[in-house]
Amino acid sequence: MAGQTRAWTSLCLVAVFLMASGCSRTPPRVYLPEVNASAAGEKAMELYDTNKDGRVDGAELDAVPVFKRSMKWMDTDGDNAVNAEEVTKRIVRWQELKTGRTGVSCRVTFRGRPLANAKVVFEPEPFLGENFKAAEGMTDQSGNVSLSIPNEKNPGMTPGFYKIRVTSDQVKIPPKFNTQTTLGIEIAKDVPEMDMSTIPLDLK
Image 1 (tube, rainbow, N blue to C red):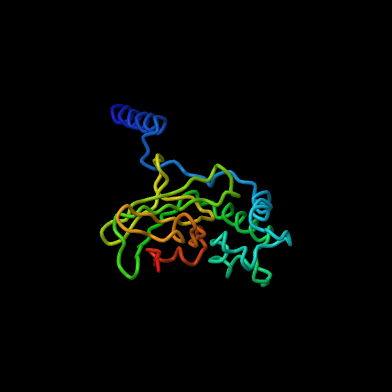
Image 2 (cartoon, rainbow, N blue to C red; image 1 turned 90 degrees about the vertical axis):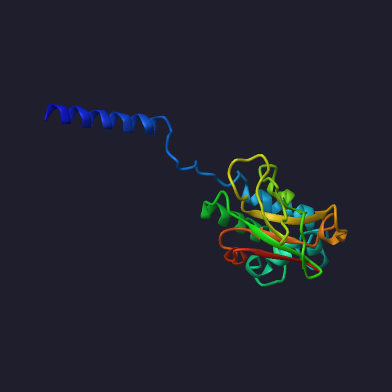
């Protein structure tokens, strides 16, 4: 009986040592970058509300395509515009969801055909602040790409508002898909597009 007790005690000590040494295979939790939601909303208006009427609408939306794409769930007052409060609400929602990283895959086609060997960059809107980093990836022969933040161990990308830029050394892609991009997307767990395993990017 004494021998069994000593063996059991030894096993317990080994288990405690392993836990204390950080031998768990569970990866550390990744948190959403720090951001002041209300300040970001005000900054968005400063950048894109060119006529200073307190909202981004009409031609102003061309400079921030993510707002145009996300209008269905961002425009809570139904005025076909985005204001500082609505931007703030979306950021607060990301914080409530407590998702620091989410996997994002896209399939890029150009003029109806898969676009291979193209660089895809999801560039965070500047009003989010410097804590939000761009995610990128290269398409394979089928035009598929998984986005990740360069030089970071954790896979996936951060929830946020993004401009999308697609470039290629092999195919001439119009500026409206890169330097003067008309592509934008909101990455968040509750965005309808996130239900798709692969987000289509059809460059027409």
